[in-house]
Amino acid sequence: MSKPIKPSIVFCHGIWADGSCFSKVIPALQAEGHEVMAVQYGLDTYTEDVAAIKRTLGRVSSPAILVGHSYGGATITAAGTDDRVIGLVYLAAVAPDAGETVQGQLNNYPTDVFKNIAVADGRVKKGDLVLFEAMGGGFTWGSALVRW
Image (cartoon, rainbow, N blue to C red):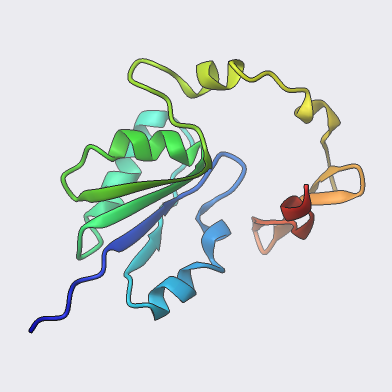
């Protein structure tokens, strides 16, 4: 009897992060036998970001589950039509419908949260809470983000 093949998992980041933001969950999934990759797209254009996901799908050996956070939800929605994709997971993500844009979707839920955020000394903060912190050339989630 053959052992079932576990799906590959491809993480897709949001605008305020890069592929390294998934670095703490990737080893645990690999330990469970999944092939795991995090896409590193350039955030230059939506079309180029979706193309980066499709290139990453070509690097995994089994059917893939795409996992998107924030803006990554929009990119996995577009890339999810690829035959190599068997599932989509949205983590606090946008999911625009056909013909809808990310900004159009966000406009449906106006917020003033960005008026209360400051950037200084390599940190993105809301009051005393550090949301993101520059670490080794990239950003990492601040522990306060989980509480916020």
